[in-house]
Length: 219
Image (tube, rainbow, N blue to C red):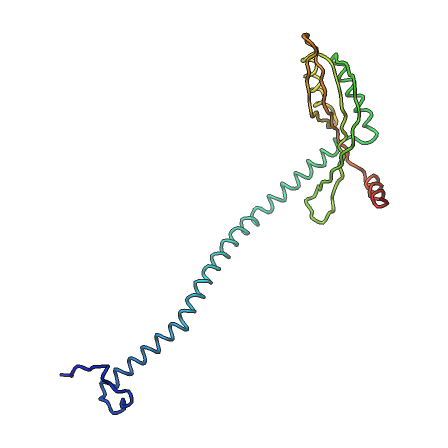
């Protein structure tokens, strides 16, 4: 039967002269220590890298899923964009030209007279200019300048006449919107004073845009 070995009593300087059992035990200890250090300095760092790569893999998978969904809907989105652009062109055609602006003012007067209203005032206000894009591009091409032409109007009549006037404005062949409405009763009768801003919109032609750009350049 092998005797119990006290590791503390082993003299490493005399290890070559120790028994074979002691030598084997010390070799095993050294091997285990080397394996432990190898794991700590190599495999531990490798495990961290593997964990990081797994996280990156999940992120890439999620990004791929999202991009795949977008790509699958690309044709549908293009079709919707084409429909929006077509509708935009239809709306542009409903905007009055410079020659039609006086006719619109006449139509406002006629709508007021047809409904028994008294047109007390119709005054043009400062033109508001906005810029829009009709093709979704980011390079500035396809941009359209739209002018808002506001007219301050003042009418007198009863409530039914005024409401019918507003309905008739919405039925005009060209786009006219009524904003900033104020309805004030005159005395104790059914007579009202109606004030509002009638906005119509104009798409500038290429020549008008060019002239406007040149004027800005001179300033």
